[in-house]
Length: 160
Image (cartoon, rainbow, N blue to C red; front, side, top):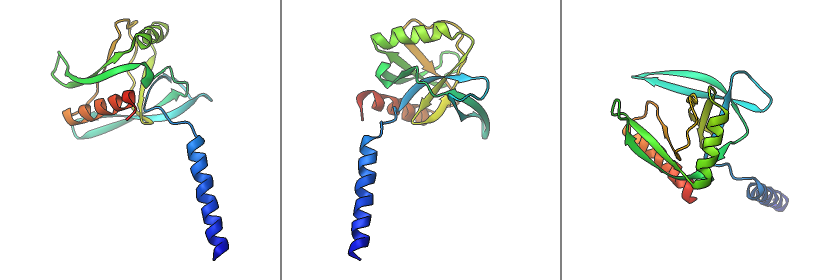
């Protein structure tokens, strides 16, 4: 019995040490979506909602993070001027603004994957450089979903 307890204790200590040394996964990431499988990409599913139906889309998302929560200043829910649907407006820090402008300038025509807590939330096409320091995440969000997502993003910025 003592041997079993010692073995269990050793395993728990080893797991705790491993968890303490593993890098914390950023909660918010911007990465490129690729057209085809690649060694430097992971397959993720983007769910498009239309009423009660959900349509999954499989995308290959590059593992390299282009921007993370350190580039963000804040997130808030606003209404889409065209249809009143909720959007999440993201404000970038000064450094984040420059980096986001560079990423969008260099990747016009490609899709930018928005990954939050390891889940793919959106993958809009980059149509033009976005230099203004603000971006919007749109989707088929309900008001509560948009508020929850904005809260997660703000939590990543403040470290909560």
